[in-house]
Image (cartoon, rainbow, N blue to C red; front, side, top):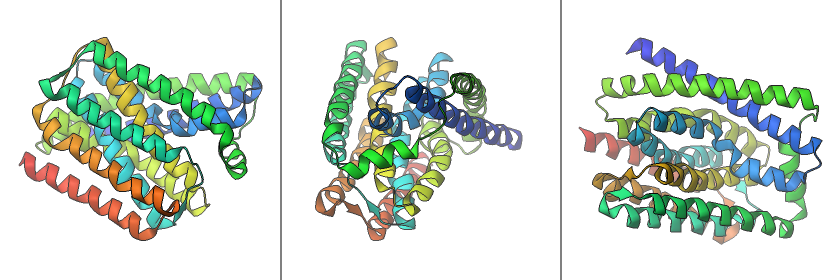
Length: 316
């Protein structure tokens, strides 16, 4: 198992570097072609940070490991809220001025409930998957239009966060390099993470839920702590909610749209309720004073730790 862990660490490094390269390339190209810096920033902060998870899940889907991909998609959502957001808020209280985030969180809650309802019969059909993808397009359009009404500070903060050079050749190279790193990172992680999971007594579903979801979130958690200390609470919370919506509607919905996706009964009974619980936990924090305090960060982190413990105990 030691060799498999080494391969996983290398794969995670490639995924982190590849995702960062693609994001910078996209930001640079948007400036090059005169796209709105704020609108592009909203999309990249909210959804572009899911690129490593998307690469992993796409690879898992292609090689026929749908349960691993499903576990990673939902596990990443729980990790986003409990680990990434919780640790960032502990590092520094998060001031949130991005008014669209509370409605987007409600969209995530509704999508989680819909997945539980659709998957109650044991499968997410192609039609249901297409409905999820269509819902994501609608949410994306709404967020884009709503962006014009956001505070002026946000119109400065988000573009500055992703600002980079607009040289065409450099950014095309970033895309090519990032795509290559993501390909090999996803390939090696999907090949070796199940070996690590099996060594711990985990099923492929649980390997995706815990091992891969936590591992791929660690670089994001570090970046979130840095952003929190810089006072960029909107960046942190926007990433968490946007990434979670992307995982649910595009990753899970997209897999089902291509091929009916089996949904285990245990998934409906525990994992989805856990994902729903951490989402609901955040809503009053956003609605109350638009700030996530250190104490609330500890609550989110404790909820995440309890989830991991329960998952392991249930497996044993």
